[in-house]
Image 1 (cartoon, protein in one colour):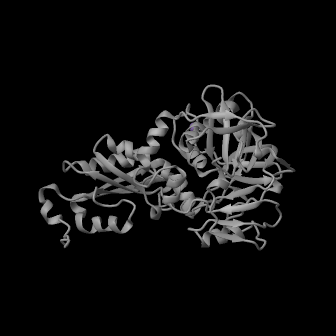
Image 2 (cartoon, rainbow, N blue to C red):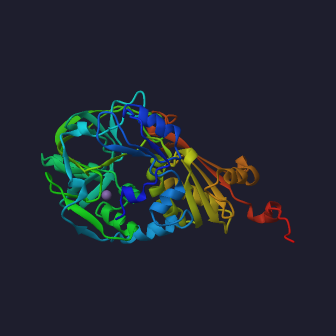
Image 3 (cartoon, helix red, strand yellow):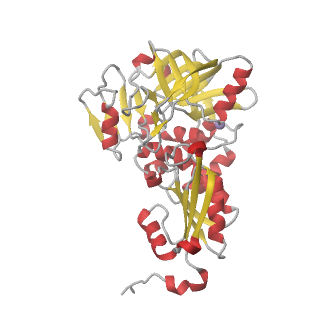
Length: 423
Ligand code: MN
């Protein structure tokens, strides 16, 4: 069964007792490229794992593909979105019932965060018209049986808005501790009527086993580590934030919906997945699902070869697009298409296909030798951008840049990269 345990490869195992308040997050922060397993956690019987995904290569391994093939592979699966789901009895995730949220080792990550945050929870819900939805949300622990959930205006927000308009709560199941393919699928920008769990099953190339929930009318992956059942209450809001997000800076306080917890369950020897905000793992899980959409957008205007949201740009604000350039206009068209496809992107560099988009030094080389600011720079003022960029103006307006770092077609000889003959 492809679950968290099957995927997990601990690089570091900590046997001493650690505190979920700051201590675990500090160790994960110091070891961004290491999967760390904490065997004894203060105040909880659960073990904790963090940095489950430590690189783009590991993420691709989880998705059954490679860095080079990733976008084509996933785009194909997402278009069909037809993986198989099977309902099973005797699910491991329901082996034990917890007393409340207090049994879980929910981390406090950064100094000025509002409190303890669940960050790896996939929230499953159902809507009569649109069907099932699975999406990742941060949730602040308010007390033993209350959470406040950040709902950005996507599918779950729409489900909740519809339920609230009827004066009804929205039932949810929050699933923690799964194979990374499930977190990836839950972050993938599917259409509202597509089921993220089916995408996950397709990625895993095996039927995904689901278990019926105990207190809500939903199903959850049977081999998850923890499930929290509850309902998002109509007409109730609480302060959510400050919270350290993908950029490693604090997101603001907002009034957000409240979840009343109706049951907490776990595997007998459950491992809680701690997802450290702004870590490599967080950035890859949030950014990589956007890359196929950028690729598809650029493909409409140029022969696109590769796309990456770079780790230095938090896998969110900076993109690199490689194209096979056939006319002088291709690169500027690619710039505009990329910025449109991922509106949070602020700076994009377009390079020729000989440049490795995953290698920051090669991208810099392209800028150094193929770019002239007076000719190759596109600047767009007062654009809607990411709310996570602290340098953006009030009202979220930002200036965007596109750098055409491709070779000029009329002068290709000048760009020839010298080679040494083999002998
Ligand atoms: Mn959805």
